[in-house]
Length: 315
Picture 1 (cartoon, rainbow, N blue to C red):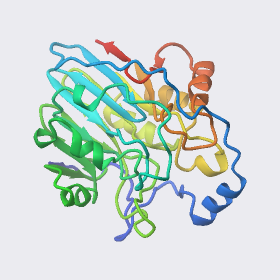
Picture 2: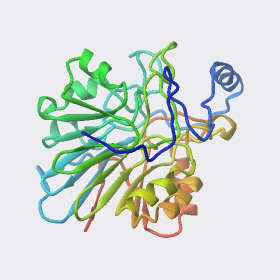
Picture 3: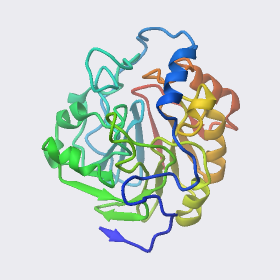
């Protein structure tokens, strides 16, 4: 693991992590206010429009194949390497099986149809991004390398999942590709008393030929400009667009589609693909509102929005 001089602002006070730009995630009282005043846009309980696909075992040559599985779960295949981001296959994004956000669409690839996974990238510990059931159920989980933000490794090791590589912002680890840990503007928690005890992040995946940016879960901030300044413009950016309403509650932690378009421009991404939408209704925005809004405001087809199970092939 490579530890460079810190390229990003300090974000840890010795006990808890924080967003250096001062953005603070909504607290308990904010959540209570939202629960009492929420006006969620009605959405179908379940949408049966997913055509499951089966990705190839690997992709050789200079081609990059990107398969949207669901939510922030994306399969990246290039140079014979298979990378999976934030794997989620559970029915609920919750610690419980009987309560919590229920999936509105099936995953676009069945667990048993996954190819061998070489690297798993986890952006933070929220249940819609770190699904222990999915991690334990990966067909090749014993062969995977798991890359996680600082202090998330303990959770995986406690469940027999590994090997785990923990990274802080600015650190990197080298496999057949180089994985850089970069900032996001968000927060962490899996229970009532562990808020911000672990880090949240995005990742830059770097090879000699291209750079891929996985933003994880993030609000809009100047970290996009910092990432472009440090690494250059990505061939591909995976940018979240969902769970953005109401803005008074969600804007400190989630981008909306218009902000994702701004991030796309700031990064100078040749292609961006939308993530974090269409599977769980986590905000007041309807299950397909992020898609419709992005289609209306994107500058051109350089910002793609794919269905669960669909893929794009980039050179």
